[in-house]
Length: 189
Image (tube, rainbow, N blue to C red):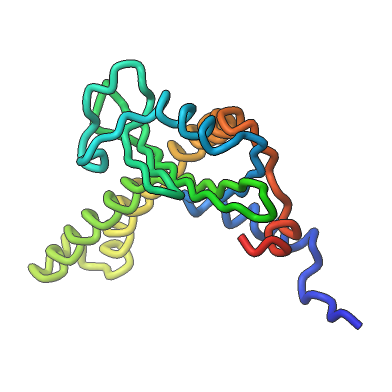
């Protein structure tokens, strides 16, 4: 007899959906009917291979992303010619199971982590130099937490807005069908 999960599927789905509002990362697994050559052609049409893609965007011309390719993977960061903020990174890993090709897409906001890290360094410096403008501990804690929350929510809100469009673009690019959780578990991807 199979053991029933602690949380029902409906509660687990709602809990996961609630958590995703706070975490700027999404993972999807797709089944694509395309052959490997066609996948390579489609990816090279939109990604400019660039060695330092993670630091700044090269002049990509008509290509939307800069990144790199590996034998069974790719990494792409959206090029933004109007500023430094490149708010989405896509990592794709390819798997072949039973002569079918599957793609795991990871969409994230890597610069959100960088922003929070830099803000953390500022906080450490403030603590080392004992900067406390208020006499109340709660007021000082509020002063320190406010910029952290502002950076986090601004980063997460921009990610929420952008990732949905990029997700649809990559689903269309691969002509992919999103796999359900039980399919992913069965395939071991």
